[in-house]
Length: 162
Image 1 (cartoon, rainbow, N blue to C red):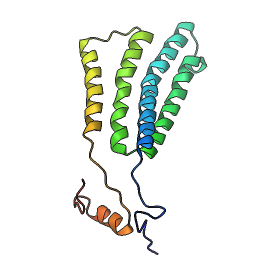
Image 2: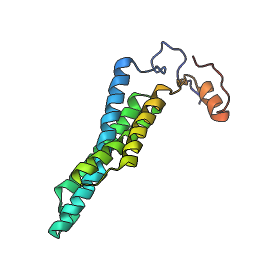
Image 3: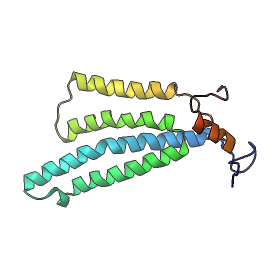
Image 4: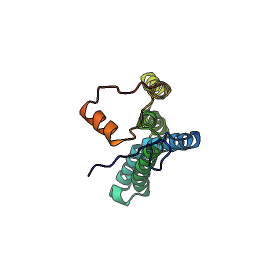
């Protein structure tokens, strides 16, 4: 049985673009989860180093467990951000975890961040911003016919995006 996904823009179930508040919230959640994800490996390594120094298993170290729990929370945050705003806005923000993790590693693990590392962090942040600013507008599929057209001929642009 074929049923339309939505037959009109005003009907319940019609695809709508998120409002400014939803976009702000989604982007905020994406940034925070990216920062949390950037800290996870640093915390886990810190826990492994601490456990090795004590001669115990890293599974008994609270810092390692906090890194593991932070990883799960960061991924949940990413999932929530993907449900709130378009993927093209959330995905570039994932790169912000790299500079955050690098800076955190230089403080917590006493690792040196040389000039190339600092430049890489700067380029990662700049690239994320450029990708978000120049992200294409995504069109929403509102009927089953449009969905079938997109699936059978993904390169064909049926509507002009403005």
